[in-house]
Image (cartoon, rainbow, N blue to C red):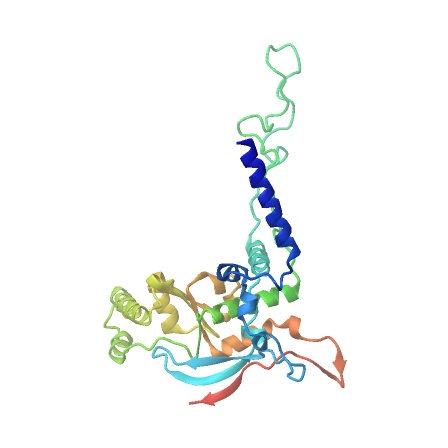
Amino acid sequence: MAGKGVKSLGEAMRGLSLASSQTCRTMPLRPSLLLSVRSMATEAPMASITRSVDQPWQPLTTVPLTIYSFPSLEPCSLESWSTKHLHLPLRRDILHLAVVYEGDKTRQGTASSKTRWEVHGSHHKARRQKGTGHSRLGTKQSPMLRGGGKAHGPRPRDFSTELNRKVYDLAWRMALSYRYRRGELIVTENGLDLPLPDDFLGLAEAGELNRELEDGFVRKYMSQIMTGLGWGKEHGRTTFITGDRRPNLFTGMEVCGVHGRALELDDVDVKDLLETGRIVIERDALKEMIKMHQSDLQSKIVINGQRVMGPPLGKVLIDA
């Protein structure tokens, strides 16, 4: 057994010496070895991953945006918007900073409790220090006694935090870009409102319907529209954003709040743009929103009496 083992070891050593004496070019490669050493880089042609110096790099600068009519959702026009407005990369950290900033700003901070010096009653020592057979006791307003003051209780305070204005404005456009890339940003014509049937409006104006019948009809009518469009509760609800209050739309969403909500432009926050399944916004409301939140795109340098105010807000390409 020992001789056989020495003989096998000698054969293995001679095989290694022969293999090392051959170069890589003279050694034949088996088909299986060829398959094992191939990589993704060898399969892609060089022309598709390289670019000639003569060909300038032209990044994407604009994205298309379709304007629809409501509730038919027929395309009305096609516009071109800057990628800095509606096609920004997602940054979860920036969106988190904006949502926390808004939440801290809306906290009331009115919680308050009375200390031992604010509780009603005398502040004299209740009994003498020694000789009564009881433990030492100060005033009746002690936090250790029932009816006494609160030790280290809440006091009115301001919970608001600070956030750079440019970072906050970037979060607004980043939330809109996130909705745009997912196909969840629907821009409609100006005057977004719920068209109610003429027969119902006539009966309502004549006073022949009570409040319960009106709310029931509007609830059923709005539910049919939202379900038909795929915007209802089953599809994540919808947020409508308008420039000002529209009576029919806002009333319909109030009685049919299970399918979504309607907000005026002044009441919208970054969190509102991220909560529901989709955003339906008027064209002018979208322009005003981006116009108010593009401070990071505006230059402070004045050239020939003018400042760079950022990319233009929408350019009409096709108007029906």
